Amino acid sequence: MAGTPTMYPTVLYHDAQAAIRQLTEAFGFTVGAKYEGEDGMVLHAELSYGNGAVMLGSKGRGGIFDEAMGDAGPMGVYVVVEDTDAHFRRAEAAGVEILMPPTDQDHGSRDYMARDGEGNVWSFGTYAPGTAG
Image (cartoon, rainbow, N blue to C red):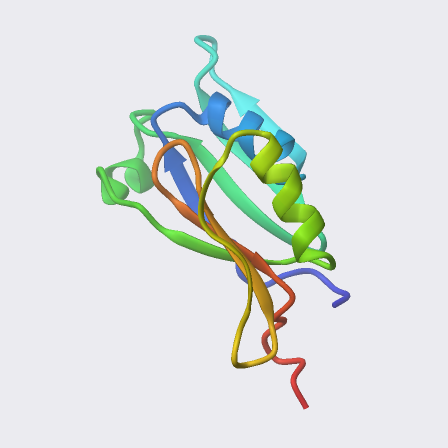
């Protein structure tokens, strides 16, 4: 799974600062960039996990994307992890709402599902699209 991703989920949060804390502390994302307005509102942030990334910002910051998104949500994102159970334990220990514990899937993946503080669903597991052979 090398190379630069060509697709980036983009999420707007009412409290983007809290979302960044949860994504980094509970799920192990790394902040690559974070741009804030003078009031601390997150104008744009990039968080990575493996070779994937998500872009996020604050709702109500203005602009075409903010208007187009309105009060959209929740959304779902799937993130490939090496050890589903270890990742799950980290999220559970951080107090994340768990929707499904680690579960073996019919297609060979082991996944779990959690909800972030604003209702978005994050799935983590071993399924890597395009690698089945």
